[in-house]
Amino acid sequence: MYELVKKIDILTPEEISKEIRNLSPEERFKLQLLLFSYAGESKEVRKLIKKAYPKRLISNVLILPPSINAIIVDKTREILYVIKMDKGIPHVIKKFPCITGKKLGDKLEEGDLRTPEGIYFPLYWKRNLPKLYGIGAFPLNYPNLIDKKVLKRNGHGIWIHGTNNPNRPPHSTNGCIVLKNEYLKELKKLIDPKLTPVIIVTAVNYVERKKYIDEKKSILSFILRWKKAWENTPKSLKSYFSFYSKHFVWKKGNYKDWIRYKKRVTKQKKWIKIKIFNLSVSKDGRVLQFGNLYVANIDFEYKSNNFHSKGKKLLYIVREGKQWKILGEENL
Image (cartoon, rainbow, N blue to C red; front, side):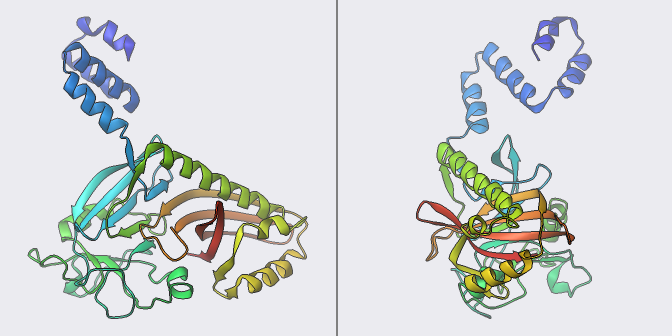
């Protein structure tokens, strides 16, 4: 970037444009700051710095793979935000108006006309639907494990879908998230099924930068230590079990059932190796009876002396006192 500045007076405008296009985003940002400073535009410099280094950050998205976006649906404002990470910080890259449930509040039961709050994942793209759904839909994995086993919620068929009615009024769905077809067509390009977290909240949450970074580092460390303890289970299960809440739930039961299951399947293991990738971590906007809920979406490859598989896990993580614990675990 500084080399460009040195020779800027001998380059043609076309050559300058070409040089700027070859700069990294970080170098372009520095160049903008430099040029505004030279021009005496201190107000523009402050705007750029504030945009690049905000004091308060969106707290609902903690970790994302480089190529994956997150979605936050603000039910109060009826705005759908598309979030991308830039240098480890969440930024809004797109936003679309949307329509949510006829009734306010969190979904409690089938037919209550509310849009559920929580963290979900689009399962696949569905088309050739009745006209009510516009150009198509992304079914979400509602109800998830925590909805069913802990919160005792029911219902089904919560989708992100289109509409052929350009004048559909606000808060007019039976619980789905609805966008105009033109917006959904654009959003579809930004969604990766089973990877893009959809965080549905009453309102977007913000937190101080330091607290955000500390929380992100802490939960990432917890997940990596859990993975290491899982690999070490042929030698000792005690450390691995310490990562789980006594209130833990899974598809086949509770914490005691999990203990019995893991002891049984680990008996024949001599060694285990695990690779994790495409890790995302999202934070629920609600404060539930057990506090905030965090959802880690993990693609993994599992190898042992007698088994090899690839899969996707959802870990539902909470804080118990000052310690992270896994409250639930399921495959997606």
